Amino acid sequence: MESNITIVSSLDLPELQPYRTLRRPLEHIQQGIFVAEGSKVVERLLASPLEIVSILMTHEWHSYLSSIQNLKSKFQHIEHIFIAEKQILESIVGYNLHQGIMAVARVPSHPTLAEMLGTLREPRLLVALDGLVNSENIGVIVRNCAAFGVDGIIVGETSSSPYLRRAVRNSMGTVFSMPVVHVSNLAESLNELRNKHQTEVVAAHPHDEATIHSSNFNNNCCIVFGHEGLGVSQQILNVCTRRVAIPMENNTDSLNVASASAVFLYEARKQRAMNKEFHDSGLRSQASN
Image (cartoon, rainbow, N blue to C red; front, side, top):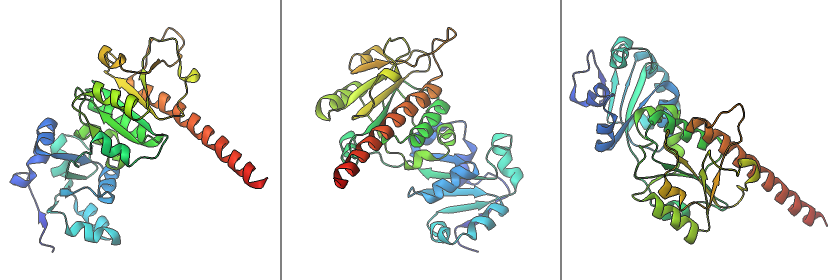
């Protein structure tokens, strides 16, 4: 048996402390770690370049993962691999949520805004989070960003981390491949985007006459999503280029912010895909003449 594998019959080992404190996720962030739970999330973690501190899993999961050729070298670099009966894992959260496998990994170092922009091709599509505190909403927004081709996420100083446990879970591990920047002053960062990087800053604002269908998302663009109850703060609204709403019926005044992000990002993706197709067809036409 490999030296980094331990068979455990309880959660008393000091190295298992992060699994015993799942309900204290802010402590994990302060320690620079996060917990991944569930088969798809952990498999995506294993496929990512992130540093994995430990894995806690059943015998069945260990047998399966050990049989995958490209994971063998990855397993050698994991400090601790803990194998336990399924009942031990179930006792952590009280019900069968994690599907028999969990992992602890280090939160990656985040680039600066300038560093992230330097790696992205134009036209860029960015998302900024202003005052979002619900980690499940943040996780769904991250997943939506991945699904609809967002190039990077800017997390403001009043928003929660996308690496909180429930955010990671609700992102389905897509956060591992999404560039994330944490900024200490979102208003200043958005001003920098506007003035230095020629980026339109669009507030998702339900109380506005301009709608997503009448707005252009084809250029460098950053869409700002705000607090679950209060929306985008006035300070941030003041630095936005535009305020844009989703047209709704039946006296519905707003959507949950995660749902709203899917609508905004789908529209942006659709417009940008159509614009690219039009541009590419023009180039083909020129080449054939």
